[in-house]
Image (cartoon, rainbow, N blue to C red; front, side, top):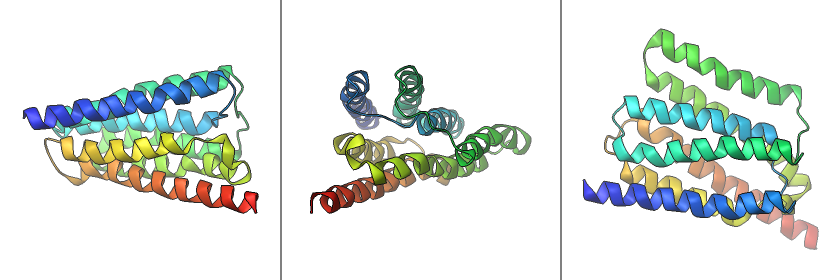
Length: 193
């Protein structure tokens, strides 16, 4: 059990290490996060945390809960700083999808379906950021997404109960972060040539 607690503490530390410079960069206007991506990510991450708790994920769920809370704070900060507040009809669709998972979970009493929907919506929440980062690849932080990749892999190791409900979200988000970093790196190289 101490091993799982140590991994969970490490994942929380990586979460804080990743978020601190990201928040500082938002305040300094160096990074312009898409506000709706962060609203979607904050909502979905926090609800996944609740589903993981219901599935006995134990201490492995705590980094997801901390991340969800800070992510909501970043959405608020992005809005207040007027970072990237261009919201499209597709962004509204992603947000409505995220919220739709709550009654679905309530009516089915099965957190798996909520996690499947939320994971899908969270990945779709990358859409506005991918669109923005493709045209402006220096508007996002590669180290931030690298830390979140590592954090999510550690979260998986810290879980006390392994099931699709507890593993799906961190595994898929780690993969999405890797793909986003690859796209940003490619676009940065393309713009330099």
